[in-house]
Length: 310
Ligand code: SF4
Image (cartoon, rainbow, N blue to C red):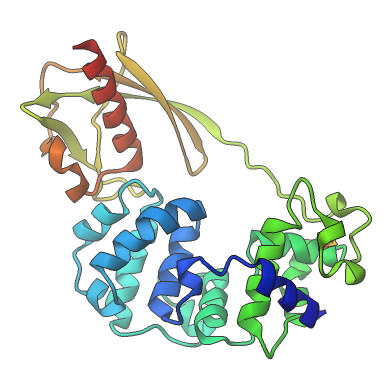
């Protein structure tokens, strides 16, 4: 099975992804952190190269300020990832540990990330289980209980080629063993797969129901600047956000945003007085500031709307 899986991977794998063309543990670690909660295309085309250009090594990152790191992360969401990344760099300075147990002592590194770093950067014989691999393993072994997945993944690991094996299963999960339409007829491991007759019975992902929430934001503009607050709440700690107002009887625009477990319906209201505790941020230089994604969305919407009104 190992041989056919790797042959399939050679032909069909996504070898062009930049983090697959490096052995640099920092670059692999960065990609794993960015890819949590964010689509490959956004990471690959925008945030990953931008971040590496500014901080090409862990050492360079270790000397950064939180402000600068958050500004580069701006728009990517889940900002604790950026803060943890910086903290890790400051703790490790030059390079990351090679043991999963040591890696898991670092902020923001759980089992998956530790295993991914060990397998992809150090080619260690560790089974990596992301959502794609989990689905493949559950179908392959016809498992109903996901508790066994890590152990089964380890059981079929190709210890001679752990990196390629893990990447092959990952790609198999995203290209063939997909959630809705698994292409079993094209699957290289079909003959060994216990779940091929009814793949939909295994590895279903549970949908998390999001809570609906309404937030009203105030927009105060003055000479090319916008009033923003520096958040002290956990989710957006130290990021700039739009000031919230209690009610919005006459909003000029609305927009939707989703994060963690919330679906937000946001409104925008023009204010004629600058709210207390706000800073005036130059609109032209917004990218130099750590601005929360929801605020960036609101500002874009407000500017578009106000320009149309001129
Ligand atoms: S045979 Fe079908 S269910 Fe089994 S691993 Fe391949 S694509 Fe998935």
